[in-house]
Length: 308
Image 1 (cartoon, rainbow, N blue to C red):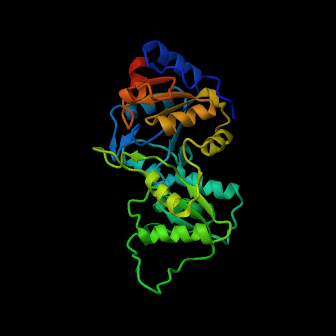
Image 2: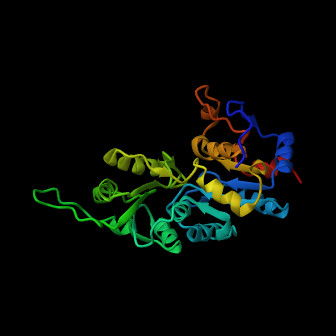
Image 3: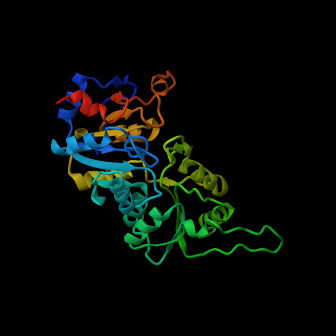
């Protein structure tokens, strides 16, 4: 991976007719976040389809890198299709996939189990990688009994706990994950990501995986291995697959502390779009130390500024 040469303190420049051409000509691949960039909830952001079609027509490689672990790559490909965009599973890098690939990279013993605080996406990616996942949505309705002489049963063969976005998190899951990490020797604690909030619907932000991860951090007094953005784990995997220099890539995202930092850590060019969680006032606030190369209102500005 290349070392970034551009200072993260440099001031972000608004995307213009001149700068978009320079950016377009200097990169071979565009890496897109999904929530807040391609869609909000289940609503496609205006102009995305035409922009993606244009970039493909011009020979640019496209990759969709999402921290949302709730879906698997297959499920994300289905969501793209439901919105009228054809994207292959090979073009999708989700944090659910990254968690499974991390375990594979660590030669995680196949006889060990993985307890999941998260959605079906994590369980599916674990299964595809040859691992046994337990928990997930199945434990969403389980309750604990807080009474004398009640022993909470858990699987001592669990060798890793993966925590991601979980709309059905409960005390049962917290206790299960906590016991595995604290009591099972060598048990790994893996966070798909630590996003504070996300656009789970098109109208407002909702708590992200960060609050679920923080709960387990609090009860275990441990910090997790993070496999999603801004960790470079996904980028290392991506670079091997694409065989393109990171300096010839542009990371497009709506979050400074995940998307933009992810791109900067890898030496990519970066474009912040204001269609998601980051506003222009957030970006330009003097307390903000993460500055992308460029910023624009939304992805379709690339197409609009490049012109016919």
